[in-house]
Length: 160
Image (cartoon, rainbow, N blue to C red; front, side, top):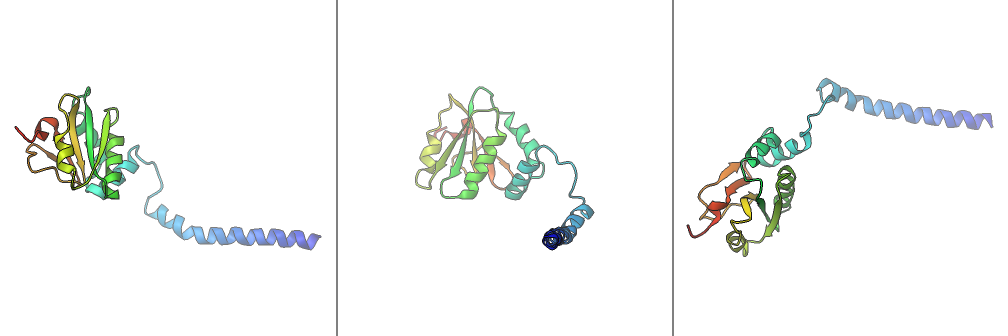
């Protein structure tokens, strides 16, 4: 009975030693690279935006830009229905657009121009294109990094 107890303790001690031995190089490297410490409140969304659009501190810059749009009108976010990158970027943009009301419109190449032209100026303040190029008739646009384009609603009218 005592032998069984000692074997049990020895196995668990060996597993603990193995766990610590394997973990020390990873934890030690993180400590030396100073990756352990406080994280800013926008760490996740900043990382997403930097990876997808190459914009550093994107959450703060995005908030500054989004606050220039009217509060009483919604924002339309256009995403490519066939691109997971575009849809994910649209979700990040919708998250960062809070407290503005947003509507995400998934488009295909066949319906893209019609969907953009159908946006009504009376209820929408701006449009955001995620990993999509706005139609050629859009004149006044602002690029946010490599994959996000802001367009004031007045610029979406194909017949100026």
